[in-house]
Image (tube, rainbow, N blue to C red; front, side, top):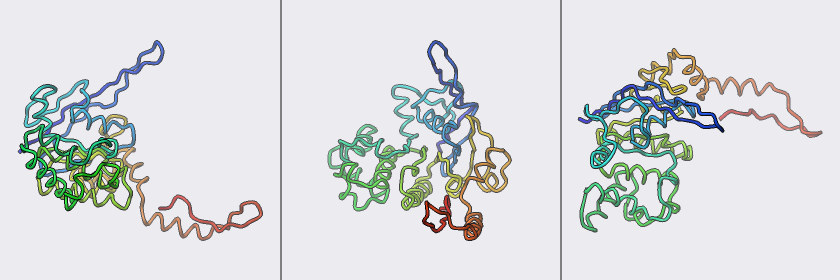
Length: 290
């Protein structure tokens, strides 16, 4: 059972403006433990540091201080050790079109990690494994998708290809960095359900990065709220969302859509007089209501 531990993780960036140099503390003393079969949601506004945490765990950024441990051993940062680490820890990025090379077919994106991590050998075996990966993410039949290029797929299909690529080396930890924020609302639920199914069927530990409290509540076992690089509150999703203690968490919950609050707004809007544009009356429409 592969356990990921993050201990006192910090990240500082050096900023220059003319002759002056300043330090931006993007992440401050973040700690948590992720075990297989569990999902931790890291929630915060843009610039809170949550994606920087994800990039450090994926070894795309070096921490200023702190530790990342996999089964109690420090994460390797180079050579064969880094390759073995990435067999266990994979990342799904926010924008599926940017994370896939537009010049290559879907098969190329899936076959490269299969060959690199020696999952299969021989042209036919590698292709068969790539098709299997496509079908694991519900792109069926896989033969219909493997020879397409990214621009021939929808946004949801591209993100499923990105998830399939992350699954190629059979990782134990999956980092999902806002995996549905670039997708149409109508297909977000399908991708989130896919991630939840994969977590259960493959016993994955999932770190779910998001700014959306609603999805964090329904798709995580533990919720951590970040603000200005720090974890200001954590606990079970229901406890954090229904009984927020930190001021920033309370603001997040107030910003989340609430059907009852919207209904009150609509009832109040019916009593507003019609607004005018020039000399023509225009029927008033409630604004800002989903």
